[in-house]
Image (cartoon, rainbow, N blue to C red; front, side, top):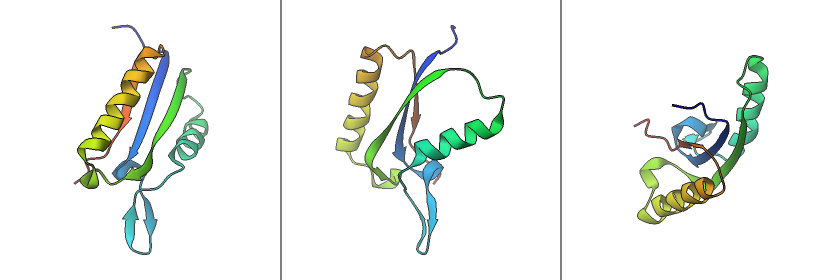
Length: 95
């Protein structure tokens, strides 16, 4: 298997990107900035190109519908058609 050099990251909401609110954890936008800040803080992060997209609005995976799944599929197909050689889907599933 060849190493991925041009990664497409699709954040849909879910547990991985939730933030604490007065009502508990909730899906939140701005995950790309938080992820980039974290990777920069590591110092030894891999050198790869990646493009980030965020499903709007970010949803708890328990609230996904077939329409949301189709939107994810469309974004993934478009990324592969655009030349990305890897896809990372951040979807949740912590329940």
